[in-house]
Image (tube, rainbow, N blue to C red; front, side, top):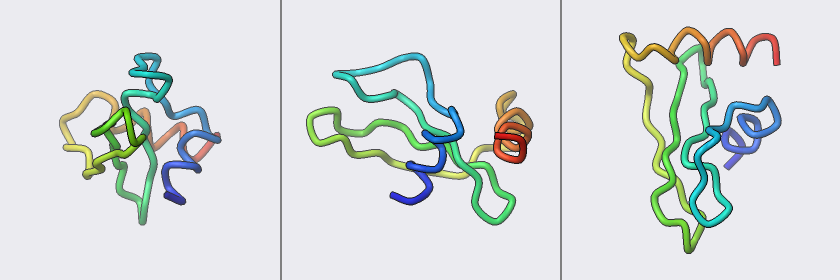
Length: 68
């Protein structure tokens, strides 16, 4: 929950929404960029996982986390 809130505060949320929830929220933990994907819009639950190194957003999330 802490990382989701931090990602939201830093503006690391997708423009896509489902039922008022951002489709994705990004955060960084111990230098590893993470992506949380909305799992259940009715309950507002997310499933998070480390981002692959070849994901184009990998570097962008790290930069935004450090500056945001």
